[in-house]
Every structure is written in C-alpha cells, then in structure tokens.
Length: 186
Length: 186
DNA sequence: GTGGTATGAATGAAAG
DNA sequence: CTTTCATTCATACCAC
Image 1 (cartoon, each protein chain N blue to C red):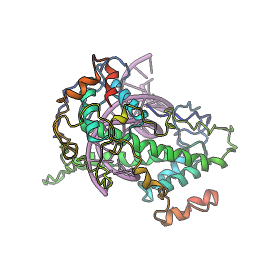
Image 2 (tube, rainbow over the protein chains, first blue to last red; image 1 turned 135 degrees about the horizontal axis):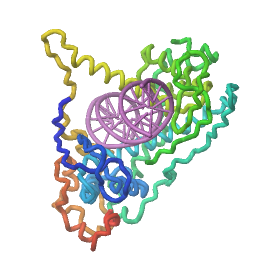
Image 3 (tube, rainbow over the protein chains, first blue to last red; image 1 turned 30 degrees about the vertical axis):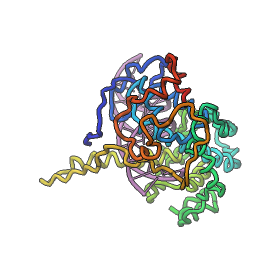
C-alpha cells in the first residue's frame, strides 16, 4: 500500500506501552498512524471523564497543543479520539445492556460444567456512569458552544430507534427459535 | 484501557479442536478471552458463508443469544468475530490479488486513496443551527487569540500546526508546567 | 522453552 | 453521529 499519508513518522516513541514515564521506546517504531503516549491517553481520558465529549475546534487545538508536549500529535488525532471514544462508549453500553437482557436463558449448559457466569459485571472499568458533570473549568467556555451537549441531547429524546431497521429474511428467521433448527435459515 | 475483560470463562469446553461434533475437545481452556466452541464457530462460519458479513446490531444480538446455548458468549464476541473474519479474508484476498498478475496487465488494486488530511474534520461536525452564540460566560481569557475566528476556523483545522502558536491563553493557565495540570485551562 | 500461526480484542482513521 | 476499514496488540495453541 502506498504511503503518502501526509506522513511522517519521525516519532520513534510510544506504543501503547505503559510506563507513565515517557514515550518510551516501543516495539513499534512503526508509524503511519498516531500512537498516543500513555500520558496523552491519560489526559484525554481524564478530560472525557470530566464531561468533555465533543470538544470545539478551539478546545481541540488547545488540547492538541498541550499534548504535543508528550509527543507528536495533531489536532485531528484529538478529534478522532473523542469521536471514537464517545461512539465506543455508547456502543459498548448498548451492547452490554442487550447482553444482559437476553442473557437470561442459558443457565444450563448441561455439558460438563455449569457456568454460572456472572452476568452482572455491569460496570465498565471506566466509570462511565458519570452523567454530564462539567467541571468548572470547562464552563469557562461559552455554555452554548459545543462544549456540552445540552442542545444535542434534546434531539435524542426519541430513543435511537435503531432497532427497527430492515427485516430481512435472516433476522426474521432468527426470531422464533426452534433451537438447533434455528439456523435452518442458512 | 477502559475495557473490562468481562469475564471469566469457567467453561472448560471448546477449543478450536476439530471435531465438528460436540464441544468436547477440552484442552482445558484457560480464560481471559472468549474461546468459541466448535459449534459456535461452525454457526458463525456458516453465517459468514451464507453471505452475512456485517450483521447489524440486532442481528448480532440474536446470533449471540442463540450461540449462548453452546457456551458463554457476548455480543461483543460476535461483533469482533465478523469483523476479524471479514478483514482477514479480505486481507488474504488482497495479498493474492496483488500477485495475481498472471497476465501482463498490472491492474494493481491500489484502492488506497491517499489519505492526506481529514477532510471530514472540517468542523461541520454537528452544528445544530446555532442562531447566534452569545457568550455569556465570563471569559477569563479571550478565546480568539488569533483574531475573531471562533467561527471561521472551524473550517480549517487540519493543518499541521499542532505546535502551539498561541501563548496568551495558555500562559494564564500554567505558571509553571506541572505537566498534567496544564490542561486546567480548559 | 522457543517460535510460529491462528485468532480474539483494541483502536486509529475514515466513510457514510 | 454511526458504522466500517485497516492495522496492531495480545493470547491461545501447536510444533519442535
């Protein structure tokens, strides 16, 4: 594949290594895409946990500037990071709750061991439960900018009806289960 | 980072052994990550072969629910399975087609468009028709360090100017850089 | 014990 | 915002 990814990969550092220390030498001197330092991740996560979800352009620039202290970073990285983090947070949340709902009928495997898999580990390792707590420093920005989503939330009153998409034969066939034959739609 | 391993698998069954029959194999799978049962793999593979590539969320949920009969499984696992399977098939395929040039035509694929800058990140993100943004919060420091581009610079962010160029606002926040704490300016 | 391979999991980047 | 793609990390398992 061609790499004209605008790129440079001068930074030989970092990997998702671990040491909080520096961007240490990493396995992957491989470049091509941003590989955040632990500190960078920490700061970003911290900001996210503080309630920042969709930083404005200004905020992105500032964050990026600050994080460049720890290593190479661009604004778009920050942008993507927040987008991904937010999206995956939601996705995960959705998926987990679905799992817990549908999870209620397989307690007996009758194979060689009953599992008793605890299906209530519900918490994220990450305390995602923090509502929209906005730290006061965040409020230094205009409240009606995009710093908080009081406005966008209003559009989300209706549940993401996301569940009523297409009803293909496939999904139809999976609905009523004759157990093993449930896969007969194949 | 923010992923809980979600679990432990007490299931001693399954292995990617090969008998398509029972989930007998049982090398005594340790755990840490999902280890699909033979039946689970079989079903997933069949689904894949029947044309299913990227199941929607509800499909994933149904599949996962069905497969939970054979052992512990989560929606996440189904999601990842399809993701990986598709990607790896594509990868193999790509590798094959690259040196597929049996004839003298070099129609290499090169479906990699050059990714220069995130053209999507032009700031159009989600402006929900903000009539006017009234800054009613006190500005401890001017946001428009470079001028009045609070609105306009949304359309240019992808420069490689990630190096800090403003110092006015920042100098406020950091008397002396305690590193992490420098982001308090947000 | 070491290395290779298959594959689960994660995530940056981008497309839709 | 949601979904998909591509790459990489991590781990289980097998072979030697």
